[in-house]
Length: 210
Image 1 (cartoon, rainbow, N blue to C red):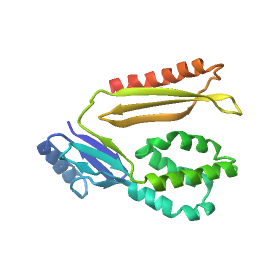
Image 2: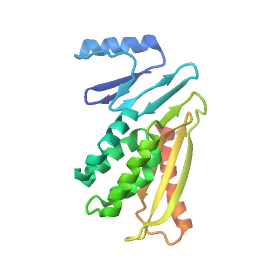
Image 3: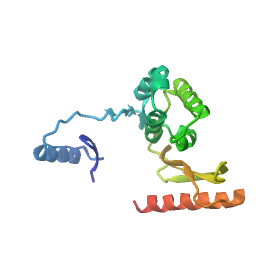
């Protein structure tokens, strides 16, 4: 079975059988005007390094992060929402470690004050120190494992809490959601945890049938 990942005019093909992969590419080229660029190494700002000897593959955004850091001095003239958007792209693709903080600063795009802008500057400084971080996947641990946590009343205005969960497969994260503000107001931490667990179970059920 071949998997085709399509975004506008960018295509990734995934197939365990090289022969079948060649047939799929041949059929696509016959149907559409397209170029075969060979083995995937870079797409949409994401590098795809491989270590075949150790049977590892990774997703990295070193170049994208470097470019973002280079423009840090100009960020003072960039709208707050645009700065958050730059961070969110890295967060969604290869940097789940910043999910929580980016989720928090993204809540104040309508009317941000200085402390939230300073938080963005701190995230960029963190990027400068950890720009080489990437998600690594191996051929081991083929059973998805989920983790969940909660943060009690992170929104001081509405007294809403935040749920978080992450699912790991082949030693790398495949789902990371740590910024969802709970719709109900929890009266204590245990209620917050029950709601967070419920959200994680929904994700687990979706993964089990997909």
